Image (cartoon, rainbow, N blue to C red; front, top):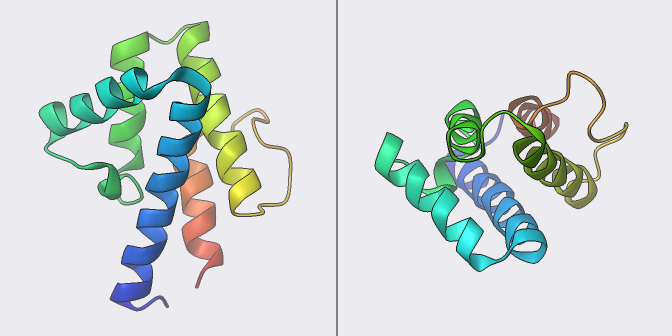
Amino acid sequence: MLEKKQRVSLAKSISDCIEDAINSNYGDNVAQVIFSNLHVRFGLNKTDIADHSSKFEQVLDNIFGEGPACLLIKSTVIKELHHHFQIEGRAGKEGSNISNTISQIMSSAY
C-alpha cells in the first residue's frame, strides 16, 4: 500500500501528465477552462483528479458535451497516461475511460 507521501506524489504526477496532454494538444486556454470548471463546480484542484476522476470526466462532459470533441480530449488524456505511466494494452480501447486508467495506475503502484 502506498504511503500518504507517495500517493500525493503519484496524484501530482497524474495531474501534471493530464495538464501537459491538454496544454500540448489543445492549448493553455483550454486547460485553464477545464481546471477552473473543476474548481468552481466541485471545489477540486487539478491535484485532486486522481481521487475524483469521475468528477473530472463530468467537467469534460459538461464543457464539451458527450460528442466527438469530448471523446477526442478524453482519448488524448488516456493515451498520454498510458504512455507516461507505461501501461500495457491499447489506450482508448472500448470501455477504457479516464477513471479506469487512473485506477489502473494507482493500483499498479501498490
